Length: 119
Image (cartoon, rainbow, N blue to C red; front, side, top):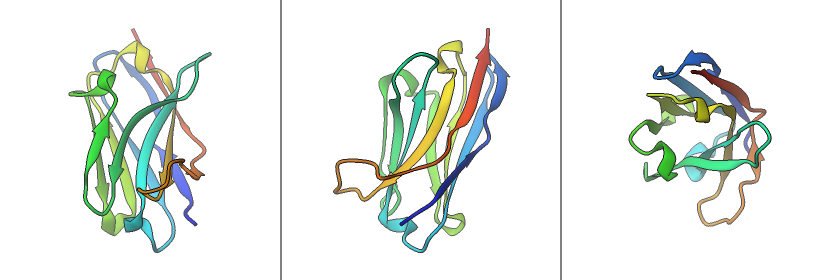
């Protein structure tokens, strides 16, 4: 089992940057795939990016490619989401989640952190 805590959200102007952190507990961090998801106001939650911790393999949704970078620090049991050139449509509650790479569903979720981008 793993517990996840997000941090780093806030209010930023369009074109600005934020770095979100997802701190994990537990000794099996390297076994997981960690994903970032977001839920814009009034919309469904959507996938943003993921990293397979053991290999570093990453994947992004098209709308954030070239602007967001997901990375991990195995020593700190932390996954980051560096968000550059933010747009108002990036406004959402951002969640990190964990699953084993060979499982279909994400089983463990953080509490979320609000990101608001003003125009």
